[in-house]
Image (cartoon, rainbow over all chains, first blue to last red; front, top):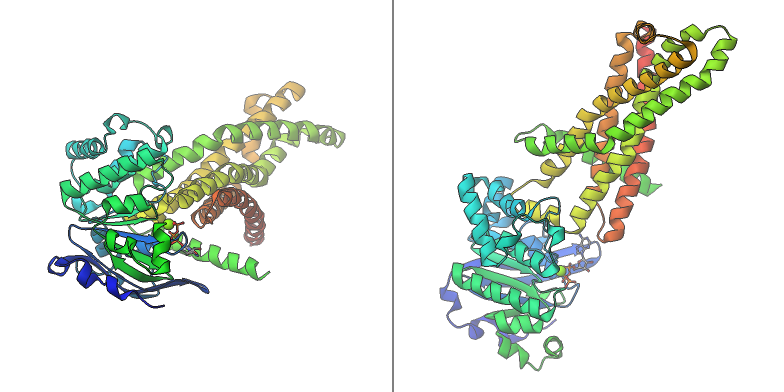
Length: 261
Length: 250
Ligand SMILES: Nc1ncnc2c1ncn2[C@@H]1O[C@H](COP(=O)(O)OP(=O)(O)OP(=O)(O)O)[C@@H](O)[C@H]1O
Ligand SMILES: [Mg+2]
């Protein structure tokens, strides 16, 4: 397992080190029984950047991102979010940290027994530290829906929405707490090219409007080209190669080339 | 066989977790009331109709035998005791296992599969408290009420038959029923119902909460929830009868 040296973080993103590192993953390991999924994965996400993680289906991208928000416990390694080490956090502190993180799930994960409004209110009401009064909640909900251009759906149930609309509502729900970091688990999977493009545009708008840092998991090359400032390739459970889109797409390494065909 | 014991172990641990987290604040009151409504709403009609019919059928079928022995005047006491002690709680619980247990299994199962449970966790909610504790509590709380309701309709059905065939008045019938029933009958059967509720809620939640990925998993969760909780109901019933028996002997 040789890492591709020429795509080190140092020379591909000059100046990134001077920026604040909002998410730092070191030597992350996770296995399920004999199935070693992550095998010493390293990654840094800097303030304000869009980092794309690419990997084959089943390579452990979702596992990695779930470790980051504490939905799965890593076997070994350290995850530092906004300067706090995740593994030593109590539930209350973890929840407080989670309020700073937006998470867009692979399948939208809208609560299907609740209306769109209740879906968006849920994180607002739950993160007690940020509990607002009702008028505030209402404006925040509408503002978030407005930013994904779905204000008219506020009283619909999720099963009345199309797949693309669901994804946008889920995006609104991830944004509603104005998080510092947003994690996207395959934001465009299962969507047609045009809808994918809409979602990508929305993601870029969000990035500019709130100056968030984004970690985007995808295997959609077009999405990666448009949105990435920097990329990490997850192969065999490690960060196999890093660099910006252009550098990686011109690589001669066969395992890297396989992604860009 | 090994997997059977694994299952029993996991289920016990799940139940222990329910008791550990269930009595620690904060409580999700509004979700609890919503679930109570759901439990009642899903099963009230079915419990009522079944109870009513069972009461009637039971009376019609035992009538000839009792007449043969010249003991037909004992009908209200006999029906009252059987319904309240045994048939009411067990029948209601079985219906609820089919109706509520499978509903909870499927609902939580699909929430697990579509990552809604994960989404709750990320939104600063303890999904175990929000989803599991409220549902199990609702089952524990609602089952005795449903049993009362089922009992009442079964007795009413029995009274109707007696009234038509034997010309027994409402007053006489229910006087006899309540004469036969002692506090010692109501208490164990209510107590039993609480445990039935616990079993239905815990098994349904356990199956759904630990549902395996994929849509097939949801079906399996709903299905096994019914099978396991029905089985558990009979085991609990047997244990309850043994315990009450000891108390009668004292
Ligand atoms: N809860 C789990 N229990 C056991 N194995 C798991 C679990 N979750 C994931 N895995 C395994 O981990 C591996 C990586 O899964 P993961 O969902 O992270 O893939 P992925 O990279 O997100 O793929 P995709 O692009 O299809 O979403 C798979 O082999 C999967 O079988
Ligand atoms: Mg995935």
